[in-house]
Each structure stands twice: as C-alpha cells, then as structure tokens.
Length: 456
Image (cartoon, rainbow, N blue to C red; front, top):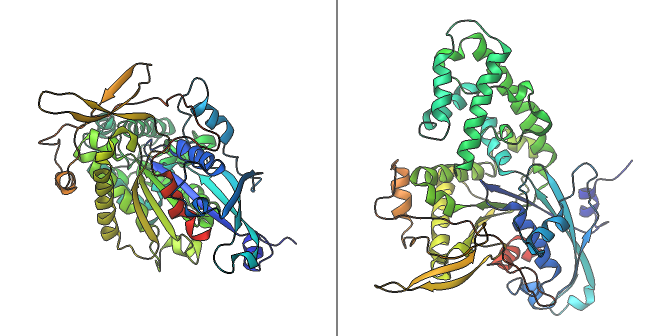
C-alpha cells in the first residue's frame, strides 16, 4: 500500500511541497503569469526582490516531471516560445486544469545554515479557469436563490435582452420538452460568453463558458428562471439539474484540486473593468468578496467540511497589465485594488490567511514615454499594437482616492461622470535578454517573495 505524499512530507520522508493555485477573473493573464514566473525563477537576473535569490541562498531551479499522472502538464515551453520567439504573440488562455512542478535547491542561511546543508523545495503550480472559482458561490445557494440573483443583475449586460425575451415567451404550464430546455440554456450561455468578453466578472455557472467533455450534458442544460416558472415542470427539472451541477461538477473539482492548494493567486484585470464602467467595477468587487468568502476559517459550510483543516495560507490579488500605465500611476492602481479587496474582506467577514494586493505585469510589453501637449506632457506608455503598429498611449488618469471610482460603482452609476478611461491591447515586444535574465516584468519578483519567500 502506498504512502500519501502529504503524510511522507509530515514524517520528513520526502522533500516539502508548496502548491500554488493560479486563477484569474475575465482575461487577466493566467497563462502569461505562470509562464513568466517559471521563466524568471529558472533565470533569476530580474528577481531582485526575491530575497533568497538576491542573497544567494537559492542555488538552482529546475523543472520536474509532472507529479500527477491524471492532470495535464502546463505547456510551459510552448507558451514561452509564443511570448519570446521571433514572432511574439500572446498564448492561448486557460481551458482546463493543468499543473507544473519546479524544484528549488536551497542553501540554509544564517549562523547555522551551513550545518543544515542544502535542501530541496518543490513548487507545484496549478492553473485553472477563474470561471470555475466563481462557482464556489453556487454551493451555498439553491436554484431559487441563484435565479433571483442572476435575474436581478442581468439587465443591461450583453445578450441579456434576448434571454429575458426567451423567458417571457415560455409557456406557464406543465409543458416541457428537451429542445426547449436546450434552446434556453444555449441563449443563456451565449449571454454569459458575451458578458465575459465585455469584461463582466460574475458569469456563472463557470462550466457553461468552458464545458469541455460536459458540453451538451443535462448538467449544463439549465438556466435561471423567475418564480412563476420555477413551479412548472421545466422549473423542477432545472432545479434538479442545478443540484446535479453542484454535486457532480463543482464538488469533485474542489475536492480533487482545490483541497491541495497552499497558496492562491487571483489575477484581476481592473483596468479592463474601469474601461467598461462603474457596473463592471462593482461586479468585480462582488466577485472578489465571493472568492474571499470561500477562504474564511472556521466556516461551518460545505467547503470547510470538504477540506477539513483549511490549508490556504496566503492569497495574492494582483492587478495585471500594470505596463499599460506609466509608473507614476502604479500606486493608484494598487490603491484601487486594495480598496476593493478591503471592502470584499469586510463584506465576507474574512480573517485568517494573509492577503496582499499588488499591481504587476507578468510580461512587460511597453516602454514609458511622454506625449507633448500644449498644457503639459502626459506620462504615457509606448508599445506594439496587435496589428503591428507602434503607438504611444495615455489611458486617462486614475484618481488618487479609490472612492472616486468605488462609490459611484456601488451606487449603480451608469457611467463615470468626470473621466474617460481607455484601454489598448499591446502585443508582446520582441525580446533581447542578457544571459541569466528572464522575461521583463513589473513586480513579479515581489509576487514570488509573497508567495514562497517564507519557505525559502
């Protein structure tokens, strides 16, 4: 009979392992984050804020074979080639769970470090779609609660009118056909995809967006219904399928993958949400609160029962695409994320694990520039657009006080009153790196120090 790896670690019979979960909200750049993090740990010339690398205790880092035979390997080499090759481009996004193992060789520091000798630490990085993390909230809701929440917030989002019209056209009797259910689920799924593409964060159920082998199954063939339809045969069947989705899809994922995570990274495209407007910002704030609520210690809910002793010790919320702003605005971006996180923590009654908010760019695609204007120069960034053109870009000035954004968002404002914020999609820049340097980044070394520095 085999011995579980976590038991062996506890007995000191194998090298310790840190498992880091990486997910993100709506195109936040998970694949780029993992690829650049691994590349910069392998070649540590740009990792000065990772103390073990700076003081020489981190002697070597290398890739190991995939530790779990049942989980696909994160395709690090292919993604790195996409980002750093002669024709650099952004790699494909996350569509399923994947994993990669790094091994770190460390020399003990301090007065007694030499007596302990060298040691190894394994870092398992687990990549999974952010849409699946948001499904956590469904586990503590029944079909009626979920339906009410969705229908209360859906108005004005892309594709919502078509779905609401389809609901109104449904017969309010006991009639039910499978084609009817499939058509309604398809219209709702199209709305979810359109909303996610437009920058909305809370798009559940997550597997409707990334169905994989479950495409077309009854577990993915339902939609929210108003109260008068919930009492019909269609409503009873959708309720049954909603419960099946929770028990057959959500619960196994978190049992098999989430329960093994020690540290969690949540990547957030705040700039994209700000560009979409106040409602998208408020939607993101609520989504972060729901994520944090899943990590509450001492919680007597389903997740606490499933995981037993809560293992997640640190959660990093990172605002990505900091390279789309001049460095003079980075502190403002961090302050906005910190304020959103603080409100989320208060709303979720969160305590326990250590959390951190940070503005990063896992791969820096721009350089800084100044745009001359009659009333003064604008601090901008310059980069290559997706169509190959070079452009200097000033997205607008973020406020020094995050409340300027968060208050109207919380009040349901339809648009920003006194500012216009823009985004631009840059392509990765061709790289010329020195030996020993990983890809250029912004604060990725600080992120690594927060995630694993205490174990090095």
